[in-house]
Image 1: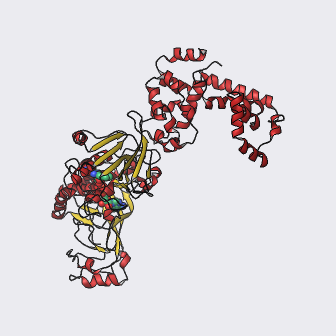
Image 2: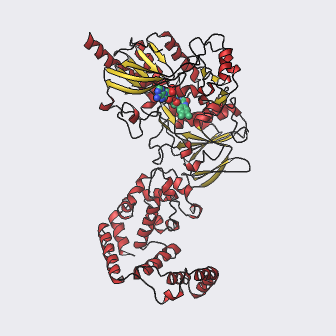
Image 3: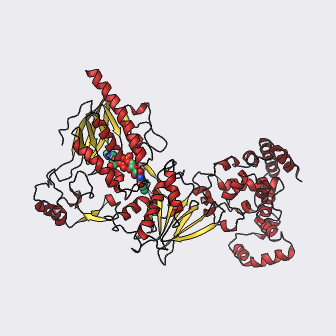
Length: 207
Length: 430
Ligand SMILES: Cc1cc2nc3c(=O)[nH]c(=O)nc-3n(C[C@H](O)[C@H](O)[C@H](O)COP(=O)(O)OP(=O)(O)OC[C@H]3O[C@@H](n4cnc5c(N)ncnc54)[C@H](O)[C@@H]3O)c2cc1C
């Protein structure tokens, strides 16, 4: 088991709400939810969520730690912000959903095969390397993340779009070999490392 | 009308709804001289626009009538209608208040016979019926109106209609040369009882009040039940005039919402429970009749709990614990479809209804910041008690979203405070 997870279980015992308040981005808002349901009803992906946001907030308060951290629900959020705009109490629901997903990931409890989580990882590794997204590499990595056969199938399905983008100079295959990142990627990586250290310290996490 | 004699022992009451009437009557019946000013052509305020009163479900006309009788019997109260405060000067015990009077074009000779209305052809939107009905441009504000005196709408001045009205009057009551007047009133204390107004429903974008004919507000629903109202007392929906039997009520429409009014408007739960009984009253045992109340939580307090229990026991009334997320319209039949997720089980719903009533929030009709350069108020603009109010005392819904019972209590309290001020003035001068 992830050592951070063990430490957190030890630290907060049965108080999952407190754990969320102290460790999840914007988590201190969770107690403000009045269970009206407008967020859930306003979510365009609502029907596909196992637990809509309103239910997640209630589950957090009810201490359902395992269920909340392991669910795919918050990974479904597409950041459309409809819930934030409509929430009568102005909870930053989108941010809380991403905060929960991120926290679950760090604890090693996030669903391993969740596509959003996998995409987020690929995207992060891609952009953190040079400071600029290498779109060609990103797309290929994404298409081939489930293996060669499925990668070929996905690429073929998207071929029309790809060709169109080539024609309009929206895609440059040569960037696969020569990608222009920021001037000093080493310094960027040092900054990112430092930022993570500071954040971990603020949250009382050992990295 | 201009020769109103007022001294600094006079109490000025602004707004003649149930709260202003109460404050004026209580003060006058304690021997104080009162000037009561009202913006509209008649007194009674929003209460006169209700079909029935909770919790007893009696007619508001009944309670109003008692107060009107007290008013008529009391020579200490000077009533000015179509009057508004334009400025206040002075200090507690000695205020000079500028008041603007709008012309009614009808004087006290009027017997309310109605001949002028018959003579006139032009029509205007009826403010008493929230613009849902057309009335003649010479009109009595409503059947119970006090003063029982017609009004000529300024839009017909200088037209043939105005002359026709004048010619039709056998009592010489129509005076088309009346002008607006500015007068000054002296007063020792002021009771501010300008009440509330419904929140602008069109601002609640996801509910489509401005887009869907069959989304209406609770105040409009009250008018539909009135036999003299826009639909003759039938629940006929706006889109096609069909009887609406499957009616939804959305609670907290504009209230308890940081995007709209932050406060709880307090009476809307009781108002919707009351209006749910109207469905039963209209359709009896008709199995198609149903009221569905969508709520966050039902807030009915102390003795109102019994009323809630009674309504809950009615099989025609359904409760859905959920704030509706948005409304769409079924173009084929004009029905409205309410979308959301309920809190008891997190079930997603898309429920069609023939009519949807928004239990609209209440906001102050005059924001406290507009009174005498700004008096103490809460975050919503209701008058609060505080140093900066001086001897200007809020009463009724000018101080908070209140039901009639509590508005009257608040008015009585304000009257007592005002009496204390003018008593001090009297002692100082003795
Ligand atoms: C849908 C609905 C249903 C309701 N049903 C019930 C019920 O069944 N039972 C119950 O107890 N309560 C009910 N209420 C609440 C009730 O309407 C209020 O308690 C009541 O109107 C308060 O009276 P008021 O005199 O304080 O304010 P108002 O009724 O608003 O009266 C204020 C008066 O001041 C006048 N005025 C406004 N501005 C000025 C100005 N600038 N100068 C001079 N005059 C001015 C207005 O014209 C009006 O005559 C209901 C409310 C709603 C929204």
